Image 1 (cartoon, one colour):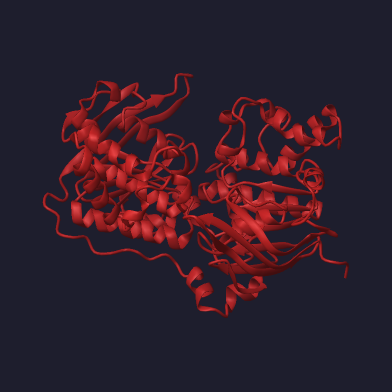
Image 2 (tube, rainbow, N blue to C red):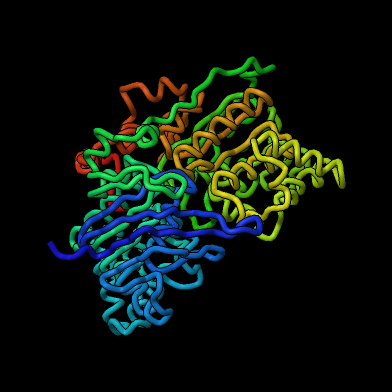
Length: 547
């Protein structure tokens, strides 16, 4: 056998926090052959992404590579000069980020961003790079591959944008690609398309890859071997099938376990009384294309209504109508039987206070220049006029409620983990003392163990405060765990709704069947089987795979 492409030995990386250097990665070693995929899994803080970007000779701001070697095809990336690294990054080693929407420049077309790396590195001229973009877009099953590159990032779906980023990473035919949670924030049906595209592209180009994720079911579809990490240490490494069928360590078995956070409902005064009704709502974004078509949803006190569906089904648009960010063309939204003004600008402050929203990406939902005490304190001052010591004491109470200590008061969002940021977003919503909280994919970007903690926190708060949730998600495991009612949406319409157990019990509506069958399973052969099932559904007109 030839020498491994990548060999990392005894890697130690530290990060600077609270005026001292703390260990992030503690002596991890790994090797990767050409054409091989190694999955790195573990919860937040395990060191997965830190190791992944270290393989490119990079450490995030505030971090440093202390010791160890990172040998990439004979070059030690840890000690290579900036000039050497510039010549290799994007050409021989490439990176695919978790959030394509946050990674693309919104002011430039996709093809302009694709061609930049091969042209700047003089791998090829612009005409050749432009043609290669079309070829890769076609191989990744993007619609209208000859023209989609001339769209701006906001003009394509999340799944399409993620595949466009994979194409960009492959523009110079790199030997190694680092995939950093590339499907975590995607809905289950879109995730299938991206996983299949990544798997085909890796095999076709014989590219080596580090695939970083917290989801063993997902990585088992892609990886040849899996390394489990925790707190910056290796837990165990093995062949994928062996790791799935016979893990040696308790922590690996914990990652394999299905999320179960269902708990009994508390006795809440007034539970079951209707607080919000979406009535015959039709809406568009002004381009003449309807994004919602005659939507009806009812939410009662102290319950959780889960809204599920793939990207573009109208889930988040429904939330925008409820919050007054998008006035409907037809229909209305009632709150305690009273019609809400179509625009939030015309709603009284008390109505605004009683309906709050928690967003999917805590990273972009928090002002990076505000300390946590200011983030949570702002609604306290806005809605209740609290200032000074009274406001600070209430902020401390809210931090305690979300299981964070006073030491977070003076931290900035960049100093928090993903799960901690999402808890702060929950505290900010709770500060308004709302009756209804709209949770828009609040756990989709979190690892399984952190998401479990967030879901348990939300359920505890519901039992304690009687708050209602409209829970927008693509994660069927989350739906099973927390919902009382389920609303299934497809292409702007409600195709099925009812009590949780009724919707999840066969026979299913064809589209519900598609969603349920798209939930990854702990079986390396699962992806091939589900793609066949999708082709059957496509033949019956249930879904168009290439959209």
